[in-house]
Image (cartoon, rainbow, N blue to C red; front, side, top):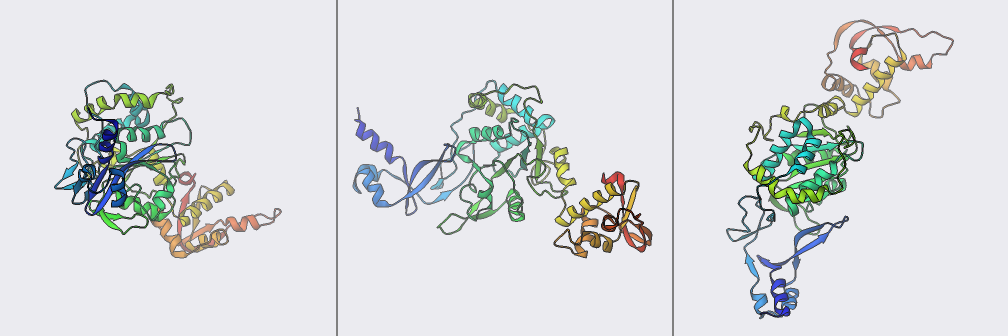
Length: 416
């Protein structure tokens, strides 16, 4: 029987690999929450020799050698070595097994409601076809106690080291090594207002080729990207600048457990862990409800929700938001008016002083492209100026001016 020293050296030797000319060691690094993430960290050859008893030791000579790295995801036909290359994708420890998964099923029904078939198809594709492009999921609610973060934790429990939780700053960073090789990229407390971050999300979510891998103090390289973004946010309706017609996002407002009459389960993640093998067995053997119909697999109407429409309705540029605010204030001031008319010049006049980047072309573009309005032919109309009315002395009666110009017609019933 081998003594403890020999067993320890053999165990340690298995932690090392040589990829090309580089030695690496499998390590587990804790994050801020104490969760351990597995990865391979570079080691100097001399350090490895010291750890294993010198360059001539049998332990050092036993280190496995590979031509290079690949990152090939698979959960149903996993290969650690592919054509002499070491696969950086981690094999899952879960083994599908028939059984019950009532906690997971009830939880998914709670989060996704009548879109639960979409959620199940999404998870099935994530497990059985990990390279398939899928929509970006955004779960949001301003209330606590909904299960948003718990869904992220479920993904981490299922996909283990092939998933990662990141913050807003990680996506905004020039260095993407933390998340770019992972399958499930979970962004907790997402609030991504920068256009550059939004464009990156959209570009990566539909990427079918290679992307730049950027690690601090190392040369850039190109890798295959297959990650799926899952965003969790308390900034309900404001987490992202989602433009009207955008079909990359599946947005869900998650109810609280109390709203659904569900008792919060403090042991839910332990229940998840027990049920994952049977849930994976269920996913492997179920028939997909939806067929492939787009680059994100699903037809957009499959994951359309009123919460997504809320984003569409409020997806205005800064100019558009300023116009909308002005029109609402004008209708609130001129309480008797059912319609208000403004030319582009009128709106520029009203917005002057309250909006920094005032430009006639932006104003007209916002009216036509963002609000879907049509400019009326040149004709007479009454111009109710909020700026003039507010500047009128209280003892004077404000009277609108008669204008003759091309203009846009706003109706109270459509604005308020």
